[in-house]
Amino acid sequence: MSAKLQWGILGTGTIARKFAAGLRQSKSGELAAIGSRSNRGALEFAKDFPAACHGSYEALLADSRVQAVYVSTPHAVHAEWAIRAAEAGKHVLCEKPLAMNEHEARAIIDAARRHGVFLMEGFMYRCHPQTMRLVELIRDQVIGEVKLIRATFSFACPFDPRNRLFNPALGGGGILDVGCYCVSMARLIAGAVSGKPFENPCEVKGTGCLGATGVDEYAVASLKFPNAVLAQIAAGVQLDLENNVRIVGSQGSILVPSPWIMSGDQPGFSKILVFQSHIPEEIVIETDRGLYTIEADHVAEQIAQGRKQSPLVPWDDTLGNMHVLDLWLQQVDGMPY
Image (tube, rainbow, N blue to C red):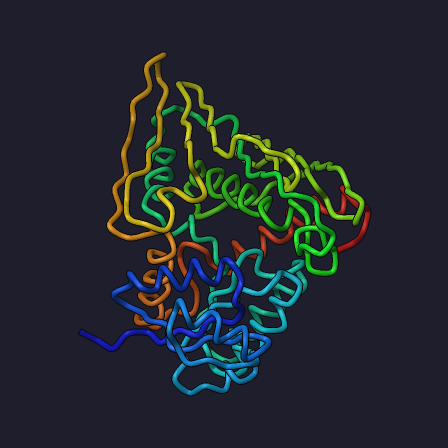
């Protein structure tokens, strides 16, 4: 068996802990080091996830043991640290959204290309067998011609202006934090309809409600694709909604009850419901690994094969997603992105 990919985690927040827990189940990678903004933060993280501790992000990137870096900082500094990781010769898995806007995303991709490292935006749901099965169902036209996609990812977080979700300087708001998933899914399904990895919309119409701190607390958008597919998407950080995906076709519909987290951090079961009558057909997907383990193993596999980008989340897909998010945000707050 080849040596495991040595990971460094840059940041010590909730998502960093989820990824570290996923690495525990991985057969292809392991946690080598953790980088925080302070020694205390790194040491606290290491109590639960033993690894070399660095009290600065710079020190993590200077660690010769680290081969790949998981960037789990707030959105606003993704670009800085993903670029610096690439410059340090590290492969990069960067949490979604890859950047604050398309311009920053292009800079990150250019850095990865210049320094010859792997780079993927961390849409973990894209790596899961449930998503792959969903794409197969669409391509096999089990519900006929797809007409409409409805995708929702929204939750109600207690308002706190100090929380990153409500801080515009840190990329707060529902569109960047979870709306990116909905846009990604709509573009994935529209692409499957036309036999492509993804499709970009030809029309984006968005609106939303800004809160006291100026971030979009909840927002909706309509997308129109060249293949006559429409999408309705909703996202928010101040509104509880049913977080699911429904795809309506000419001969039925598909409901994905848990499109984003599936069975979660642990191995388990997830399902897709296909409605061609009043009684749905239940398609069960079983996995022997958790969501973040699957993602980490996918990255390690691509790196082992010498690839610089993932076929599941290629760079052009990331840029197309960021472009739509820019348009949506601009229509909500009127600011150019």
